Length: 112
Image 1 (cartoon, rainbow, N blue to C red):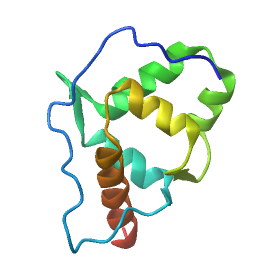
Image 2 (tube, rainbow, N blue to C red):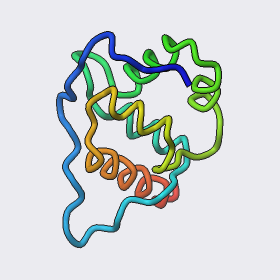
Image 3 (spheres, helix red, strand yellow):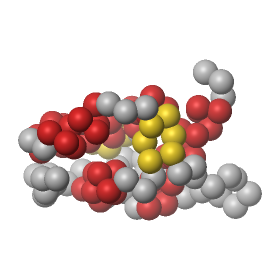
């Protein structure tokens, strides 16, 4: 996989809070559609969602395998090396990623 060295650093505008006590733990995997919906609702840069900036990162990488992972598949796994690299590039803590997975899991469970 191509290195994802940052070209610019964007701090999340409204980072997701860490999971609160008593709430379910983040699932190991979530449907891709639910993960992308949560990312589209999460601000990352002025006027851009987290989805927008990660999508730009993936496209700019030139890595065909990373691009195929990003564009396809039916689920996103919490233990994915690609996910970990993209989260680190965007400055997302493991707790923020867990919160996003919890939100995506709740969205998927809502029966939408």
